Image (cartoon, rainbow, N blue to C red; front, side):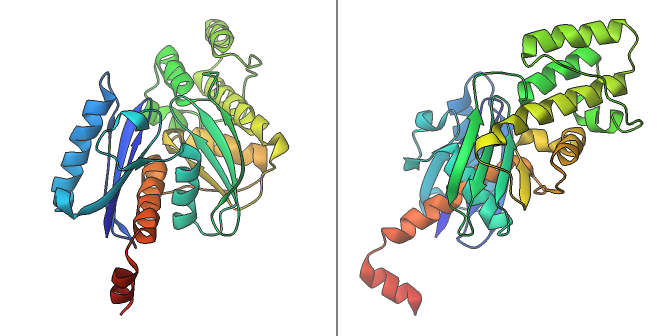
Length: 270
């Protein structure tokens, strides 16, 4: 059975078609000002590119901030469960997930079965999220896709002490005006984001293997800072943005299988 997972986040929308064993297709688009409409458009585009008819999709599960507004979905699921399912599929040895998205960050502990054992989430402060990284990109006039590379030349990192995005912005302005090199500021920002994120591990721990997901995982500077702070080598999916959508598609497949009639299950087993 073909299923689809749709992850409607604050910054981007992700869609995955799954055939029960592997990914058929995956797509990412911006959420924009009309995320529900953009999600519908992305859904139809992935069906077309995947060569799949709408009637061939057995079940659709939506997740993310906009999950309740995607009317085409048969069910919704939490981001925590979806990210855990997606990571467990890609990395069966994973025991900790670090997910940093546009508007929140999460630490998820998963067991050997891929089930959520514990989690912590920051969705109340912009510091340590993709929005904060975007703000720094604009302030320093460094494109998002170049931030990691721009931070590589040296090793020293300036201190960003503020835990609030607004106050951190003031600190960064002060540093640049005093002539602090941009690469040093970037490393300081990345270290600050890493520490802010890892502060959530206090009550749940951090067990290897550790997987880094979310759009911010595309930033090699953040990944490097997290590795330095944790002492663990991070595992990063080829496209870390689609983990939640993949998990939603996997959950859709498991729910569809559970609802199959007994006679159909027997025939399928033959």
